[in-house]
Length: 256
Image 1: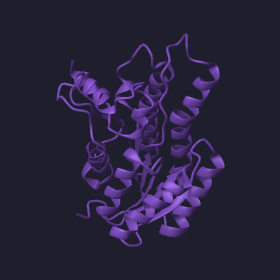
Image 2: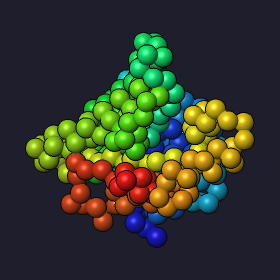
Image 3: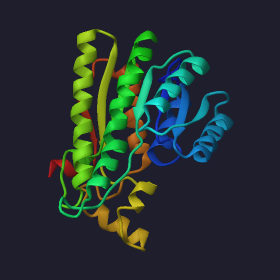
Image 4: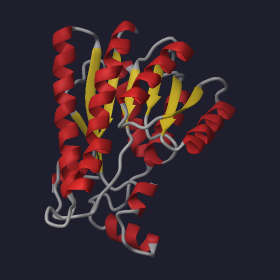
């Protein structure tokens, strides 16, 4: 308990899936959390659920992560409600199944706007507040697809690989500025969340999960808690000497 006590965190895409699990775990470990999502009702429900367990630990915020104005409002909310910001989890993202020939330019740009531009905006606009708050940790949720490519994930591979390298650039910038902010990325493999549904193309969900699990050395699809625990570690002072690197939460698939 209390691994992030006294910290203020902002988690994007927190209405469901990995984001919801991360927001809940950070609150359970003592952080005050801004639960942000373009899905206002979902973010509100998640913040209420957190507050039922950990009173006054969460607020919900409507947040289009591709909008600079929404990011500025999020920073203002963090300062006004909780007095600063110490942890930024850039989790919001979408998937896209298409090869380089099948992908459209419109969808390519949309995937990069949500999965990559949002991370750039979050890092850029959160850093002044994080610096003023005494420093902290940026955790960018990439994917194992940012390290291992697939023939039918052209836009997703590209965006998630860029998140990995951007995280390193941010880490080196912060180290050079001596602002006490660290930046790292996490790279989950298949995690049992709603985003996986759109990438299955299979009406039998359980059969699809079993098929995916066969690709993973540990023999199962990941759980949201598997990712949340890694993010909790990076958010905490336990990882104070870790920056500019990545954690692969992939059941061993990248070791093959």
